[in-house]
Image 1 (cartoon, one colour):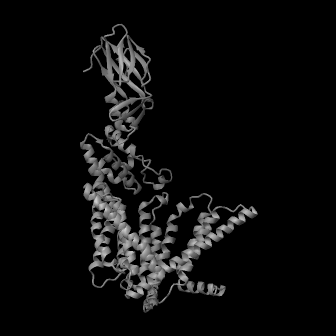
Image 2 (image 1 turned 90 degrees about the horizontal axis):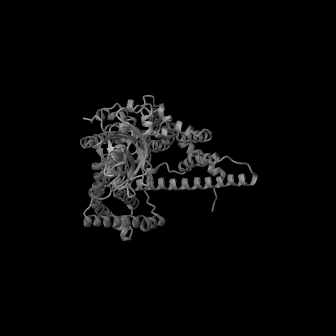
Image 3 (image 1 turned 90 degrees about the vertical axis):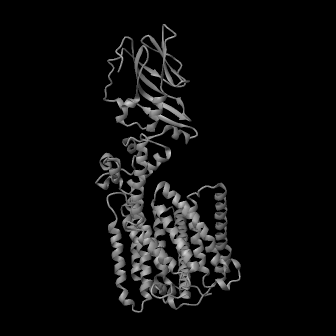
Length: 609
């Protein structure tokens, strides 16, 4: 067996550079740039330069696909301008990145990056055959792409592990104290330069002339004993789940949509691999894969649409649900195409996905535009319902509004709720919304509880407790609410601090009365010192249930909620809670550490109107 010589390796490297000069220069610059960023001690260079890093990553697949496309044209020189167009678009992508806050917190930009990255890799899968189609040549091309990926990944991975182990050995044997960042830089070097160069070094140039099918035994074994059994397993699971749904007569869970999507993609991959040799292989699983896989897939697509539409109807569209719905429509269209089209061209699979990836990245029809409008509509729907229910929300409504608030805040769209809430959100919540977006270097989260309190929306305490087997604890501290505030006490003669909890048995005195906490009735008991028949019970239950709406976060403008005024036959009183802690479970209240100021007046007094 002949081993690779230095001259052979050097020759292949030079040929690859001559063929892909722009791509390899781009990869080299990007690799060393990332290595430089990683060497920074501050640790935030990557975040502040993420726009450049993502652009450099994005350019690799697009430049490779562009070169593949140009090479297959009759007059390649006329198409070189296409590389310039791609470079300009990459520059615009980097320039478009919003400034002024940590770049990792821009979900819209990151979503576009992943869509463009997926589109770039899909472009590689069909670029040479955009203007000329040959079934056998296309299959051989896809095989070359897969082989190149596996080869480059294996070689660069082995090289990284070997060099990393060498660094560890040098560090251990010679006490050199190698900086841990060197391993990260070595990884970037192997991935960005070595992996890319190896991938391009042996890739055939005249791909459309290679019409000979080489279906190796290893590939046949892989399909027959790994891929198709996995397809059958997923089909069995999903059909068993469908039977369970019919027996129990319930709607499918949202998670099933992901499994159906994975099954469909796995089936399409199998179809692409076996397409040119399906009828020549004797194994029935391969020979009968088409059309039976698509026939069995169609009923499961009904399950997929029901699952995703259920989530959309309940919670509106988000980017994730948007893509699941788009993929569901695409899977249905491709399944019908592969079942009924006379002249099937498998190239339609990557081309259609490529178009969907680009189309969903922008515009009012895109993932972000539709999702944002849907969430605004969901907020208005739930908000209007809560306002009609005396501003009291159940757990589902409460959590949904908070989730939408976080969603809109992440996309800098909280102010679009102004027409719905009647509150200038940007002015009301300056800790999270500011015209100067540099605030995000200091504030990275939205206090949704503060927003809910400002909107006057309360969580139904009974509903909250029912969803917590151990009950829910509430803790309020009233002293800070009354700081710098006065309370009128001229109507009362006596004052006394009191303690209220399940263990407080000692009675306090106030005027001619003894005061204690009645844990059985959740009340303050006021008894006459001289007449045992004269006693008054001041119930705390209604007050505690009302306070539970605030979910332990009482705003300053609600200080009056910590005050309980009461009037009995011969007494007038006021309780000002200073510390209040209690547990609520199944409408049962247990008072823990609690204290209050008690003001009392006995007859004669002017009765309140």
